[in-house]
Length: 114
Length: 112
Image 1 (cartoon, chains in turn orange, green):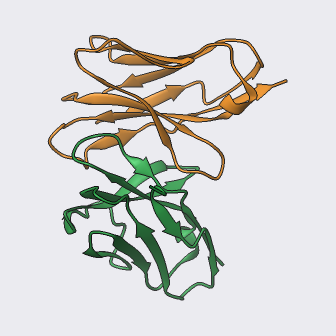
Image 2: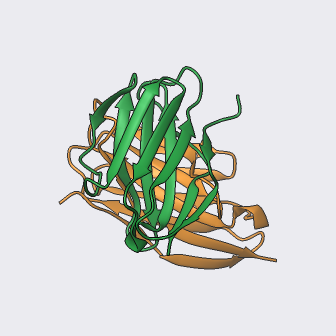
């Protein structure tokens, strides 16, 4: 069964600290993996998209890694800010040719405290 | 571009009533998606369109749900009759080809 599991479910960190969120998937075949940030009351916003051949991609203070062999991805946030408080959702696509084959994780809720 | 625009932002309705959610995708995008998000199940794809044509509606929970896209700039998701278990946040998203999605801000539906 195609699944995307994220951990931890929630995380509290102090402003300025770094953190890493995890995503494990069992989706096959694999096409690409996306990380989204969802602020409370808003729709998800894309942070990164990685294909099979990419093992790291950065977007400002966000760096995503992908290990297609172990089917794991991580999202590292550097020097966290209060505005980083949000849910982070890992999404895996099983078929580049079909837009409907996205499997969503349930997200990690990050709270950054002053 | 104003992004994907959804209306209303919030809807409270009584069980049994018809509910219509609206979406205006980003101009030029050829894919449109309807998602439902709940705490228990996360984001779930309901249906998606390509060039206004429904491609996959296997995620639509039951016949009470229907979606239309009469033109490239407008789509509706209708629930008739609504039930309390339909309470969720409904998102519309659009994309150009197979690129990243742009989500709207969602409609929070409460059925009492």
